[in-house]
Image (cartoon, rainbow, N blue to C red):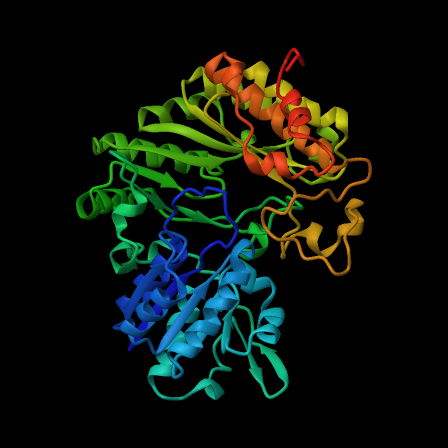
Length: 467
């Protein structure tokens, strides 16, 4: 039986995104192939085909099941693809999955009759059982025994019991990068850097009010063994020629003993590879950073979000600005790059506390990557379900969509957020080039403040204010 797994494109323009293989589909495809099915994967966010091309791609795969994965930021495009898929292959069972589908399954089934089934939660075993049921010719009327599904029955939308999380992640086959039919695997590589993602854990024990990870994957931290992780790295080197790995865990160093064991195993096997990871500022120390660098780590992503202790406490981040400064200093002293992420417009933020962010960038000399996100209320998060608890003002008719520019908090306007964003960019530029004459303001940032002229925006970016 043929199964086509699609990752949706992003409809907004002018916002470059890193090329990242949809790892969830890689795991689902690997699981399906392991049990005798014929899956194929198309990542439509890379070299996005037009609708005629996509229709031809779907038709050529002759799928019995079409699985569509989407995040909140591209779920509208996922609905369009579902409609196109139904027009193209009428017989196919159309399945929607991913974080957005998990939290908004009712909304998707009501809006899009072309969707037959929604996978709620982790998809590997659920998709396998669904494929086995369809392959037996039992039809959609016989899927009620499968945990982790939402579907229609007459005018009702039914939800089966929750799918139990996979406790032993070593059970999972390695993600199947070779199942790609669009694009080519080489499209994820940049020049001489051949990087692929590796996932070593799932789950998060923290309670950040803006994040849905702990809801999607559970609060229990589930891990792969160090041997299994490093075996996959060697497999990727041998089969795909990679020379870099991106550990995509939310908190790669939560279990510091295991992190050291992974590093020691890489060193013991003398694997010549570089890698980066994401973690929290309260989950590192100098000793750990040293062995990480010895094992090939070149950089770390930290979700800092704010430099205000009051804001960090309000959004339940679980650490203080002192811990941020400590971890950043340790990381820089070890010679590792830092990707520092901030969320502008969090509850409790003020004009004064926003200014702490560009000041921090200047003080620390951060010059690798600064990521400034506007607050988005994403399904599955506490802020989304209880905005009034955080003092957020949300329109009843509003649905936050990725890259929307808005402020939900009293006393902070769009202008405050944009000024902070531009100051952050200028501070970053000064750290890198020491010459503010070359600083550029991108076109979208000029257009987003109606009342502010190009010259006023440009003035914000100059230290002396004379231009």
